[in-house]
Length: 121
Image 1 (cartoon, rainbow, N blue to C red):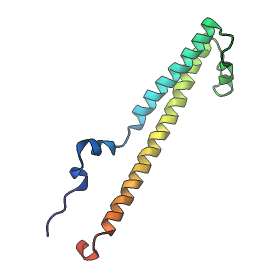
Image 2 (cartoon, helix red, strand yellow; image 1 turned 90 degrees about the horizontal axis):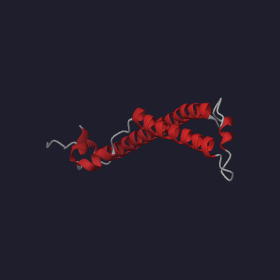
Image 3 (cartoon, helix red, strand yellow; image 1 turned 120 degrees about the vertical axis):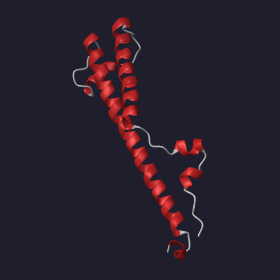
Image 4 (cartoon, rainbow, N blue to C red; image 1 turned 60 degrees about the vertical axis):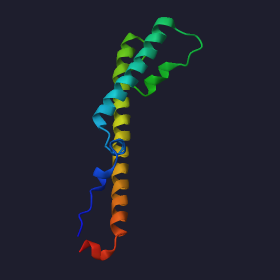
């Protein structure tokens, strides 16, 4: 009986790379740094220029404990922005990896069940 080729090895390299899991920690750190920097930059902008027609970012204090529109608030916003971005991105990567794993498991099961029964003996 001929040996069946592993379907993962038969995929083109670019397609096989698309199905690799996302590193949850790396995505979390990248998004966390970006989110924290954006919150800190917005706070510094408001402290330096005090724009009149800008949105009221002091409302971030309702979500981020200790946040105010001040220099200390920029550091607190950097911290809470990092934490929020990290947790959100980690969860998105986890859900994506889990969904992809379940989807591939279902496809493999369907492919195995579509073969004649006696081929498995």
